[in-house]
Length: 393
Image (cartoon, helix red, strand yellow):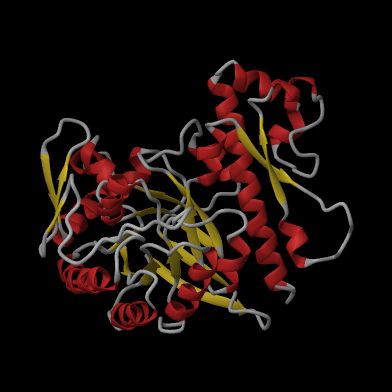
């Protein structure tokens, strides 16, 4: 079972409210999707995920294929039952690993460049540790070094056995260092793969196509038109986003104009706090990001940061700061983690105690910060949904 209904459109931006219905529950959009790489968000159980306000998670096809393997997951009733997830699930296609284990590892880059680099990846370039072919990609297992081939057929078959509610077409996520000709050649692979994914799928899972094209306007529009013309249930917006957040915003506007309005749009791998209002204003319905839990495991907490002067600026509603609880100064701080937060962590524990746990490398500290950070991100998105309802966003 899968459906998407738009319930309200903003008159101030391209933001919109909607509801995605799945066999395992509903997602009110716009929504932050938690990253459960191995089928779990580290240190938290399914009840805690729901208590944090999380409405859905996305797991990693490549890593679940490696361990425990899709056969074991299937024999145990699929991902939701196997992991006791009490909320809708997604799986990516493995396309991101084409980047992360390939050129991403070779050049030490993410999907958005932190600084401009002189290196360029041109057509014909191959990563050092994987081989990209017209039919799919040869990976080297990070566990035992064995060769693994995943193409569109293999990706869909793996995802069908994993059994998530929403799955994605197999694609290549290009590097931000890839030039125009490389991206052009990449699309010539990715677009036929999208059609194969539609042809090969036998399950009732919702299948999203993925738009690529890098930072190049004509390629993004070409990809959005092609993928948007195919009978996918929804659409992912993937790939790299150049060397600035401004480039990302422009890219989203190019793409979303070309996609069918009545179908949901998911932004893959982007969702820092400062990004969230911007991407929702562009018309993104769901998005995933590792930031809240990744930072928590390194001892960082996101908390509200009110401006010294009340400007009544819309941006002030989303001001935040990161607390590094590894620092000794927080051992003397008996205030709540965030006095404006209603999560159980902020109501129960002081910064001093949480800093003690982090500095002592206690797992409980990672758990409490992970819960708070997820709650904080979800509250930001919930507040934006309420503002859209009131016509203020």
